[in-house]
Image (cartoon, rainbow, N blue to C red; front, top):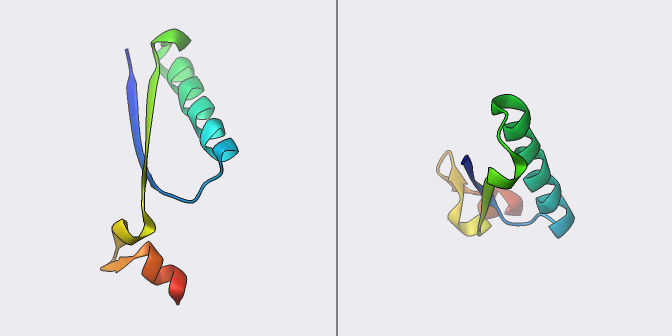
Length: 64
């Protein structure tokens, strides 16, 4: 049973998140022949103030 755990910054629409779930599920099905019913996808949305790269949060980047 593959478990795909994704952490992303918040801000996507429900439709975008649904599309991501579908794409990840199908990637597991296609690449390792996992049955669809066995694929688990966990999406974790992190506030932009808690997601940083290069010592700058995404919220700080958004403000510049």
